[in-house]
Image 1 (cartoon, rainbow, N blue to C red):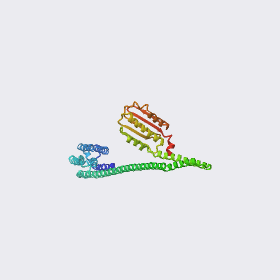
Image 2: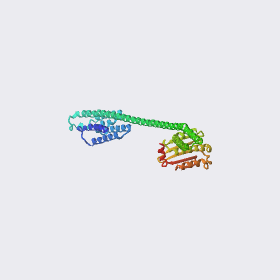
Image 3: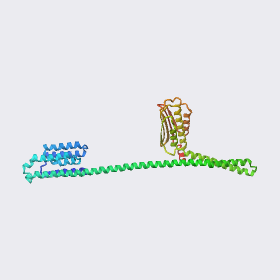
Image 4: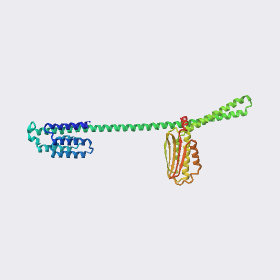
Length: 379
């Protein structure tokens, strides 16, 4: 707002010259030219062009001395842009024009009070206008610099906040992943402990009960031994199911496939993983098996020099994409491996496509709708 008010104040100060001159056509033309300079100051971004524009306005004072009365208004923009040489030229031209012209209105003498003192009063008025323009321009420029510094500080602060938020999110994701990995390791440990300890004890108990049934001659103990044998076998089946579930849940799809690609030395494999951690068990095993078979096919049937393996989770499906740049692909189409891949995917209600144009590609998609209940159970 002050960017408009300050030059308007200088322009108003210049118009005090109406106390000394008549508002004739040259005066109005000079005023309109000053307004044009004011507008140019508001819209011009190139300081040099604006400086040349002001110098041209100053030179018009040689043809129209009334223009010199508005030199302070034009010099405001020069002071604000630190174009001090151009502003000094305006002050110098103002003094030259004033003393050279002698002001035709002053020569008449009858229209103004003070007679011969008029040029000096007008000179003092415009010099005061130059001083006011300089002070207001300095105030405007200082305020603009402070506002720019404030915006930079705010932008830097916002950027730091965003970086800090992103870093905190990254740290949180890393911590969550470490917790997830620790949970999987603990599940594996529990499954191993159950299998090695409780499972062996139950197996021993089942064998002992079987031996007791074989050597027992008392008919009254037979129902009891049969019931005990049934109970122990049920317990063994439950423990086996629990151990298998724990081991299945402990499989990390990303780590498993990354391990496959890391151990694959036939050619470089770029692995990209963009899926959550709660991928259904059947989907995990299907993708791991397909990845194993695909890498094996690359090694046996391809002359590829690079491969890409991507796993993505979309809102409605899981996707596995494997691609290589091999050209020797004539043996792939009739292999049992591709048929096994298709069977695994179709059992889960998905689709798999093979392409041999410019390399070999495998695209497998499995919809989520049949895996929702199982995913919730795994969680």
